[in-house]
Length: 223
Image 1 (cartoon, rainbow, N blue to C red):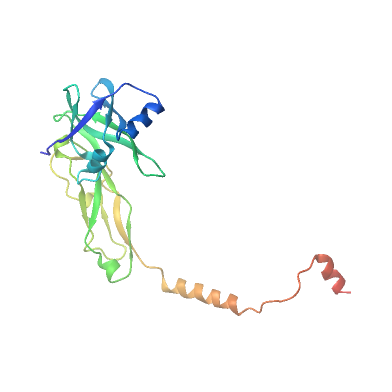
Image 2 (image 1 turned 180 degrees about the vertical axis):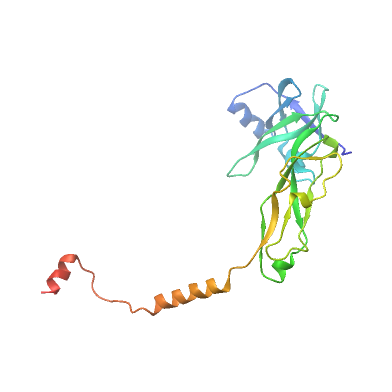
C-alpha cells in the first residue's frame, strides 16, 4: 500500500487571468480539485512542490493527501497540468478526488532495462514504440513503472505487452498484442554502397563553366 504524500493547498475564489498572475507573483499557481460527484473547488498550490511530486518515482500517479486551509482533507491524484512552452514553468494543475477502495484508470510508464545483443553486437537500432501502459486498479496498487528487459533481444526480435508480468489486482487495458520495443536491423550495406556510388558518379560528371545567359543568347550563338 502506498503512503499518501501531504500537499498543503489554499482555497481561492475563481478569478481572472490577473488573479492567476497575482498568485504566481506570490509563488503559487491556480489549481482545481474535482471528482467524486462533488462540486469543484478552486485552490492554489506551490508549483515547486507539485514539480517535485511529478519528478518522484510514482510521478503523476502519486497518491496525495490535500490539506486545505479550512481543515478539510482530500485524497487525490494529479490528473493534468499545464506548462509554459517557453519558460517550462508550471502554470496550472488539476487534481482528481479518489477513494482508496475504488479502482482508478491510470497510465504507468514503461522503463527499458538491459542492453540488447542485437544493438550491442549486431549494430541494430532499438525502437521503443510504447512508453506507457493503461491499467485499472485500486490506488494503493498502482505500480511506479513496468520494467521491460531487452537483454536477450536480437535483430528483428521484440517485446510485447503480453510478455510483461502484471501484478495481481491490476487489470491491463492496453492491447496485450501491442509491441513495446523491437530491435530493427541496421541499414543494409548494399544500400549504403549504392548511395555512395551514386554520389561519386555525380561528382565525376564534368561541370559546365560559362557565362549565364537567356534563351535569346543561345539562339544568337547558333547562327
